[in-house]
Image (cartoon, rainbow, N blue to C red; front, side, top):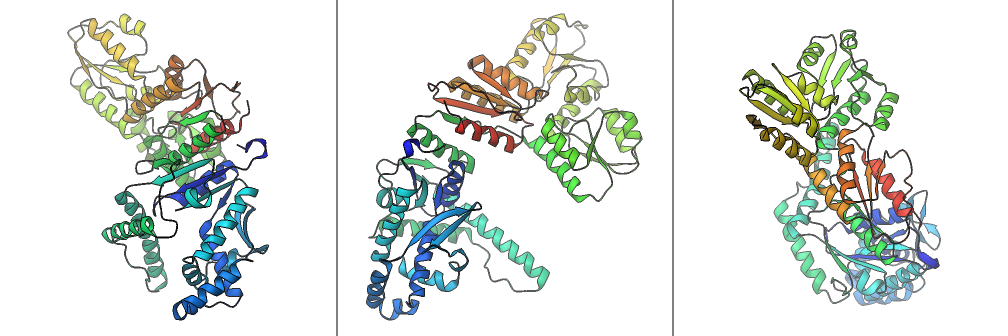
Length: 538
């Protein structure tokens, strides 16, 4: 997404400590191909410049007036800039890459002292303003939108509740502490870090907020034209998309709204992670999944390259001489499960917990004498596996015609379950059809929560979108249902596997492009589609 007519574009992100400004600013800059202006690194470069010109940190304590006077004189000639080289941000001091020198203790101490001086802040603001005239930039801080870039095309005030910011900082510090403890246990070295205290961190953040908002020089405040973004309940991707959409509006381009539920669900994620870990370990002989681990050809091919095979028959199970058989999240029949356990291979069961619950219901209710009705797709791996847990009659019903044609003794009670990824509305319609025919039905709505949320969210986004994109494999049942749901409310619904570039035929009138994805769609494929959509010209 390049700037229009050669005009440089600036994004200013302000907010309190711990709101995630730097993380978001870096991500947005990378997405847009802009320069992320690390103002902290620039202040460190200024500190290095002062040190190289003979200034001493001790003077700030012993003779602050002389320290400030000398800094004011020197900083006028400081030449500081930022550029990217091999995808790394380079801080330049008079054209020299000073990245290796600005993180020392001496520079940190000088930066702490010098950055408090009005003369230094004024010079740095001047340098940063000049940089924004030459490059497209994303800049974060506490006075960017109010002082440094008051004319930025997009201004954001990024915040989060004090408790949430404290929680984030606590988790970061705890991870660092645990790493040091682990290293100390391995090497016998001491632990220099203190175990973080959540209450103390929260109090420190409150104090810092108060100080930043009431400081005399460039206090923290939201610019009048800045958009408030509260990230308390948002992921990094969601915050980034919010800011990117503000850019889209400014550039008169369509906004992109990506479903929060798009991509791997918990069950699929667990199965995929398990297979990749086994492939990386390479400790237990050949690895095979029973059936493709998920309905996504790209992932299956990637695993094949890593040595993971696919078996599909009982004979192939019996032929395993050691190695590992991984049962996929769709599950298998009781007979196949027991056959695998009786083989000479090690068995890892990644059957989704929601699917296992259906197996338990089907086995229990069929033993109680009920006729099992599975509302789902004929031939689907999950449905085939579920049928194999019934101890009596079982029927799969996929359509209204099949529900009307179903014929069984009325004195035999029915237990109705659903394929976890079945269309919620169609499930309710088919249940109503069976009940209207006077069957005694006990109904277990076993459509998983993730499917329900995914379908509901997809429908809502599609109702707002001028173009709706559904990403997933054409062999994926849940993706096909998402496409059906979106097509009902958005005439321009496009099905993408992710392997091809979308041809959206945009006219320039579109305001919103929606994106969702099936439960078997990797995040990187969703990202590729997002990037392509944002780059597409009318």
